[in-house]
Length: 102
Image 1: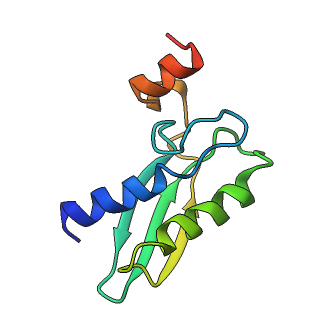
Image 2 (image 1 turned 30 degrees about the vertical axis):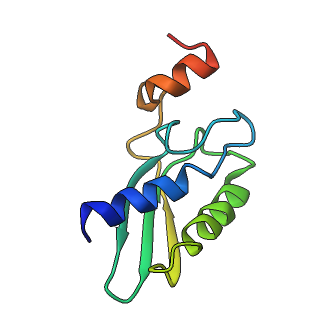
Image 3 (image 1 turned 45 degrees about the vertical axis):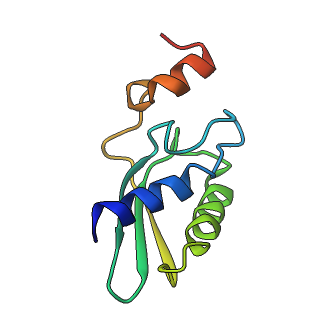
């Protein structure tokens, strides 16, 4: 997968908004990696802000929908991991400013 495709996938994932925080999952630092096979199977490795996040299933559905809009993506698999654990240090400067975090 080339960098342009990775950038396209990350750009699509910026449309997935964490409903509790109102910031997209990329700027929140929830997306650890994306990959796309030659067969069009996308794999997203990501985390959630907490292990028991009640919005997890909804976010996974939104990830699949967002990547499904890219013509190269035929199917999406989402791997939720909790190692390394998410922390506010994962957030972009934009997200920290928007949420008032230093």
